[in-house]
Length: 463
Ligand SMILES: Cc1cc2nc3c(=O)[nH]c(=O)nc-3n(C[C@H](O)[C@H](O)[C@H](O)COP(=O)(O)OP(=O)(O)OC[C@H]3O[C@@H](n4cnc5c(N)ncnc54)[C@H](O)[C@@H]3O)c2cc1C
Image (tube, rainbow, N blue to C red; front, side, top):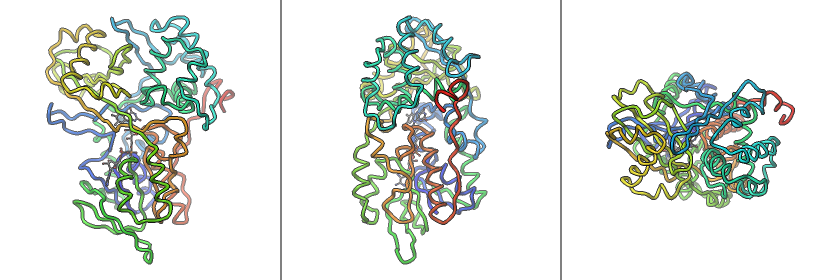
């Protein structure tokens, strides 16, 4: 059994199957695990950095299940509050209270100075409307729905464009309403537990050390620097022969292709020609990438006591205070990471321009940044960070079992999980692929972790 792709999808499939007794070989093109959610030594600053801060939420049950399986859950730091800051420094706090769901977030929203009375009324109306599940085949965009539901400029710019569009990493004009509704229900309505946010307290790749440990303990293997570049299938023996650049040839009875859509597209020409591969190519062609940029800054002093914040009305969107979140980092001053989601404009800037803009904007929120000395900085642009979720996209997300090749299943965040481009979608796809493999060899196993049940009054509103 071979899993190709050592991202969250591939690791979660491999670990689930390894634990179930399969002899798995996990094959990864790079020298480390994690794929789009990984860390590495950045040569420019000589620091191990994550390619970008990755957050998860309490509702990410499969990712949490994967972290539990590999013993990484105690390296996730959880928080239930979100500080929004306006230029000038005024702060508002969103988060939960003692009230039952879906009302738990209401007291803090009503007290938030970032929103006018009309903004709050508009948001409360929108939340009420989205309490019920939106049909998955709705073709409305989030932007059209906001317009139709009387959302104010403040609510759109400071909440929908910032919080929701950055969770889905796309412009509101390009987001299908059911995906936005799902984010609202999971993060703000279903329960306080579903909406709490988790961040890794060690570099991402270190978080996955337990995945390799689990696999090795179960007589499985991880092959690094092993890019799949030749494939053949022998019908008589029902076996795959895989040519791996850097790791020779391996023979395998089953294959999980846990790859992003563009990497699968590259493999199509070398896969055996079978009926259905053109249809898969046509599905892949419908997907589009969205970028995420992150600016990593080392200052000679602390510029804020906050661990993280949402920054309003500027190009930079999220701040993560890495020195506070990862206190083991020995910095004399502080290490701050800034995120810019879904901005093709920011991603087009050069290194110097992007860092200067980010530092100048940061000083508008935290005056101490203007006094501090910037010791070093790095810009990481991921142009292919996530796939978009425009209306109609679901028909182009293949499910694990729809691979056109024999003894082969598909995984990856972009496959049919019902989730947007997230680590949770990747973990779900891995678990679904593992279930499909068990079914194909004549057994049934449940690897998919069920969703959290709505709490409080949501139990009756959205059962
Ligand atoms: C900058 C950025 C910020 C993000 N922020 C968040 C966030 O805050 N929260 C969140 O949940 N998600 C976030 N995401 C999305 C998340 O990272 C992805 O959804 C998830 O990691 C995808 O996992 P995957 O396993 O499906 O794919 P990938 O991570 O892309 O893994 C695929 C793997 O396959 C390997 N591969 C490719 N071709 C071959 C080949 N021919 N042979 C062998 N191996 C091959 C690749 O090297 C890679 O390791 C972010 C993504 C980025 C880039």
